[in-house]
Image (cartoon, rainbow, N blue to C red):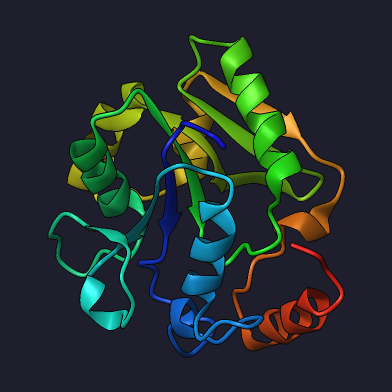
Length: 197
């Protein structure tokens, strides 16, 4: 199992989905969050769920609630809360809505991150671009997130491009399928029945 902490980010607004995607049923689970928690708990010793409030979930887990902000649904507030709670050198961040990221992807990212100890982050990248919510973030980024929140700037892509970031290329885009809207959710439901996770 991986020693590095894993954090599932499940505090988004889900505006394109029309309902909270973290609470949508998925696979054999009542919610997408429980699906991710179950899968990732088999790979990591410690898994946490980043959220605005844990009250929306009706199951037990290690929740990390966002630092308090005025209507910020970007992961910035979540990252700051994670850094403050875990006090660790690095952690693996993954969005709740990418259920097909697997152990091979995580292994490759960890290997690349370990090989470059000076990196601020190690992030997955495909032909469609970087995947900011699938990668390893180091504590050196903590002050940057605090500054971003102060400036009301929540563009992770901009932060990563202006930091010492390792980008690890992956050929298969389907692995990083995001469930942003009802069409992508339906596509994922079809895929999950044909995929061994």
